Image 1 (tube, rainbow, N blue to C red):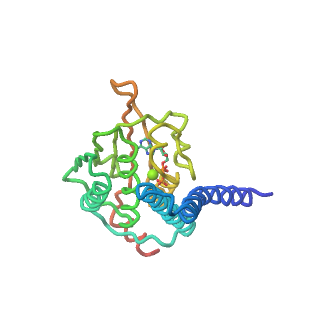
Image 2 (cartoon, rainbow, N blue to C red; image 1 turned 180 degrees about the vertical axis):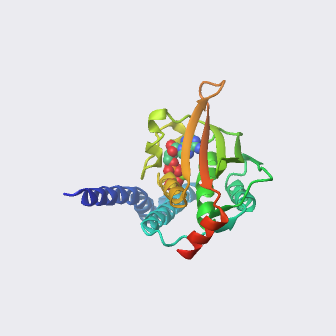
Image 3 (cartoon, helix red, strand yellow; image 1 turned 60 degrees about the vertical axis):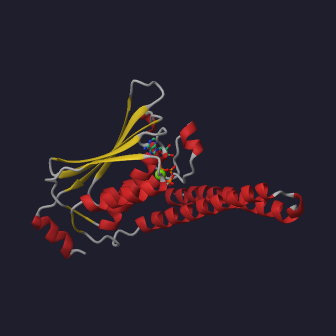
Amino acid sequence: MDNIEKNYEDFISTVSHELRTPLTSIRGFSQTMLSSWDKLDDESKKKFLKIIEEQSNRLIHLVENMLSVTKLQSSNNFIFNELNIKNPIEQVIAVVKNQYPSHKFEFNYKNNLPNIFVDKDKFQQIMTNLIENSAKYSVENSTTTVTTGVEGENAVVEVTNLGIGIEEKDYDKIFTKFARIDNPLTRKVQGSGLGLYITKNLTEKMGGKISVSSKPTDNPNISKITFKILLPIKTIEEQARIKCNQ
Ligand SMILES: Nc1ncnc2c1ncn2[C@@H]1O[C@H](COP(=O)(O)OP(=O)(O)OP(=O)(O)O)[C@@H](O)[C@H]1O
Ligand SMILES: [Mg+2]
């Protein structure tokens, strides 16, 4: 079996497993409700319906992420334009804040930040994945900080949160397909393990780089986790060249 075939088989078996788990629980709870309707009190019925709803949401999220992965194979669906990143980041923060109302957000925007040359939707997809993760994997009542800056020819965006640290040996692993780190915080929240794989691919397709670092804090159980993306600030000439190839 060649490598492509092996990757394909691995992908199919992981996907089948990921689809099977929520489907099995949707079927199980529906069957129980149908067969024992009269014996169940309202409280239990509500609890079962809640599980069915959650598992359906999990399936939708998984299918959406898998579609994003499929789209990564074709590189011609990028529309590059000049972009000031302030508004798109503010929009993403507002959306994630809505999903995580008790989580706090801080946005340190540098005023003189040059425009970057990217696909706006893809840039927002990158920021959504990183900012959603930071809220999802944070200790309670903490703050996500988004900071922008310039490093050489690149614009830099850093997303920082306080959570259970990521060991250095897992820095590369978390950017691969279906990779999740097993710890009490990850177990508590759902995820397909595709978010960072998609994020890394999109960043690199726009000429950028992504990295992670996890630093200890005064509290031995809490680390400061930072995801950093670099996106190139193109000269007018480079922009024109990219536009010509679009
Ligand atoms: N900000 C973070 N703090 C701590 N751990 C993180 C953070 N972001 C990601 N991780 C770890 O990396 C793993 C992979 O993240 P990724 O976004 O790819 O998948 P997911 O969040 O589990 O699922 P999905 O994003 O597809 O819904 C997570 O399961 C978690 O263990
Ligand atoms: Mg994620």
